[in-house]
Image (cartoon, rainbow, N blue to C red; front, top):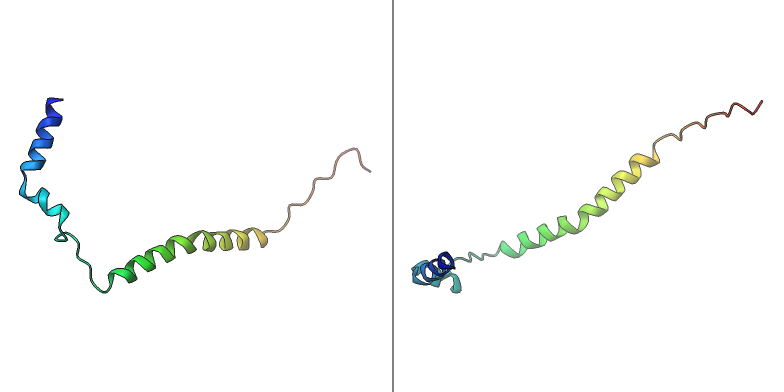
Length: 73
């Protein structure tokens, strides 16, 4: 409990802690929406690309020949 209080008081006394509420740490440029869009595009399309690759891989695989059972002539 004492360590927690020291952490809270230390964080409150720090000058940089007050800067978290400001926009000083956010560097938003005109490229930021594009980076977000491209990141989400990759995240959304990755499962579809994986699904297409796996379908293509297993569609080209030849079917396994069935074993002839020994009791058939």
